[in-house]
Image (cartoon, rainbow, N blue to C red; front, side, top):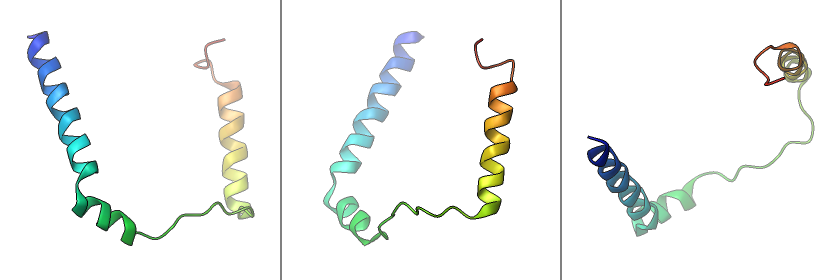
Length: 64
């Protein structure tokens, strides 16, 4: 059974590599908008990030 799962994983990996190397996929990706890093984060996002950081720091699930 484990061999069958590994075989499916290998086939999936090969298919993904094939599709990424495909010329049609390459043309499609070139049509996508370019993403850029925005230096100024809106205040509501800063607040959410602070809450997330606090939750991570006070969590019992952080391996400490």
